[in-house]
Length: 96
Image (cartoon, rainbow, N blue to C red; front, top):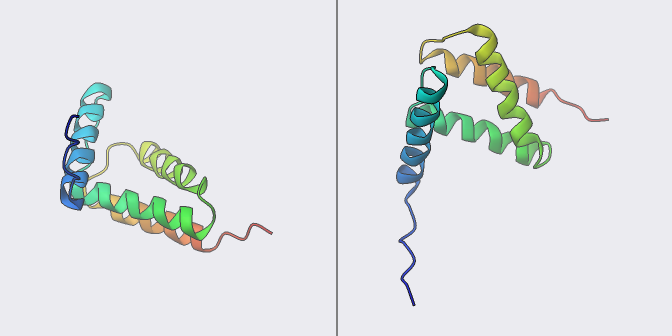
């Protein structure tokens, strides 16, 4: 029987996801997200999933990607403003 790898800490998970964004960004020619930015995107996805419904998470992150893409290359700090804008939109959503 093989040993399964030890579970990753939250910091290790964020760094792994940041490494993924570095890889993907290099492939498509854009700025990668750092671990703190990855955490903010995941928080947005969590808020959408728990505040609306689970499938809202990928939709919210797609919307963030569209906002970022429409704005062109953004400085690192601008992600916070974009996430806040989407968080406000999620909070005001009324599915009825």
